[in-house]
Length: 106
Image (tube, rainbow, N blue to C red; front, side, top):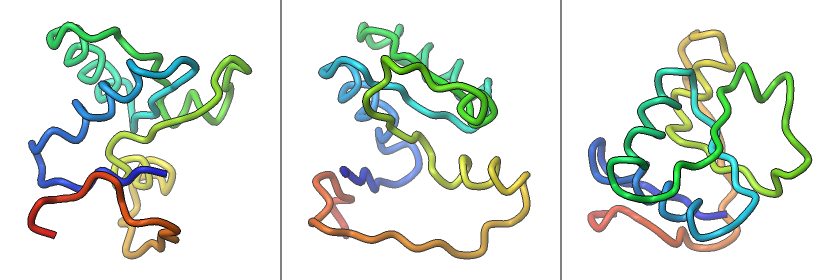
């Protein structure tokens, strides 16, 4: 699993779009329809293929069998959507390998 940890506006979503464009069967999960629309617009504007996207709500109902891997864009917003927008006070993450994409300050 790759972890993209950069400041807000640092290019995390663009990295995710680029990664999705390099591999078939990828679906990017977004918190809501607005976030999915923004991500698709960003892909279009950057000249990259528009990735297949699903919202958290859509994912709960259906995930096509053609999808072999999922990427999560803005995990904090996704967790908030799953928690029905209750405050997400803490989370854990098991890191088996060093993150492959990291904030240059961290």
